[in-house]
Image (tube, rainbow, N blue to C red; front, side, top):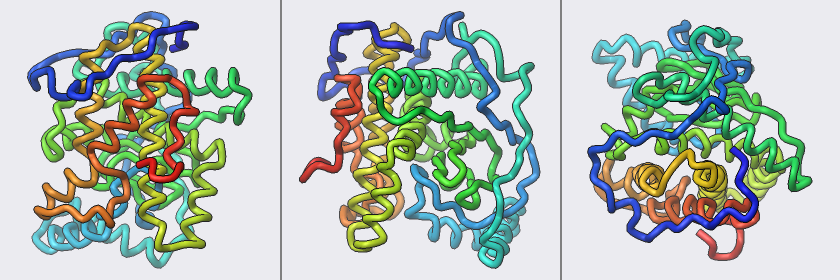
Length: 335
């Protein structure tokens, strides 16, 4: 989805996320030039969860991992088989930290390949995500090549159900989508998008889902250009800065998602109305919104992903310019 030379900047009003009603059926406009290539997809949906240590990837809801474990423990004690399976895997893995990435079941051309024309998140949710993944990766391959930056190396997308093993530990539906720099894969349970609307209160929509995928591949760009490693090194040297640095890393991934979104807009794949869906999703998973919903009050010092307003602001920054250089969230007082 190459941006046309001299493409106009995207105009995003401050209240764009509030201007359209929740009831809508807008989709990303794929055509025959958009192809779903399953070669970079591992489809583990329905495969048996083999266990592994608790996930430590980038982009998930890792801050509440301990709380999730306690909730799962209570659910398991009350007879939930899935919760029991997850807690046993986590406990087992603490004694086996060397768990490897699950090989998975490779996607077959029959269900996740071919033209993306007419594909949307309602009529074919898995193929839609693969179409988005292909577009996002193709965009960054072109972008990095034209800018003379880091050489683009593809990152596989792993689709799973409920839980699977990653190079960073257990990937579960509870922790949300995340990127694992240790195996350079993006992990996603499609059920997260139901959680996004039902649990976090987002309106949903095709471009909202695309934003989530593009955000995780934004973390892959940070991995390729060395930002992720530099931030982790800084966090190790200065533990008190772990959360603020994590917020800046997440907000930059939001901005990179917007950079891809700018190209999608320039190519006519999305319109202003779809941009509102992505902004709404970004706000729904802001730390302040999640904290207010789960415990009734907000503690900014504990943020790890950024406030709803900050996530919208940085996604919008990337959408407006389409330039990764405008995604420097590490400048003084930037978030």
